[in-house]
Length: 180
Image (cartoon, rainbow, N blue to C red):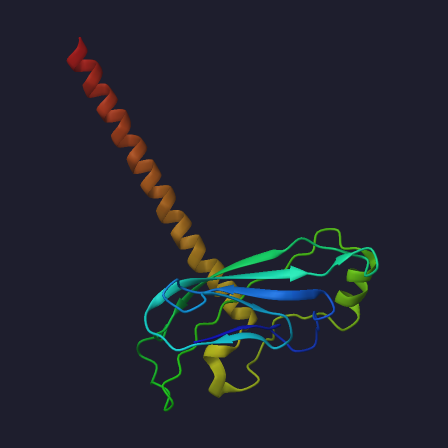
């Protein structure tokens, strides 16, 4: 397992903002809470199974830096098996469990805004930089695919809510009939 925090594209450097990154691993690991204060912000361990890693980004504070950002927390469901079971296994046995998450800076200070806008926008690419690393990169189509999957699940949840609501109404009617 290699827990790593990095930008989608390497052109935005947030290290001036980041004080440290804390990784909370499964409690069965020795010292499950690891704090990394220098890039690369990563933790390497071996293991098996699935568990949630909590990644907390701590920002520098204080008026001397002009930074007033709150800590940011990411919950990553680590899966130490391939997402796609049909994909051929890697020769070295590595499995990639990659999560895309966005840091949203609400009303950043001028100093933070300067850091964030000092380089071109960090947009998701349209094409892979390396087709061999498909499971390690994100594309704009990934984002739209995820939205489509979420729409399907939202529709399923709405259908289930409607079904439960109808069953509840029917049971209420049966209850009233029994009371009369």
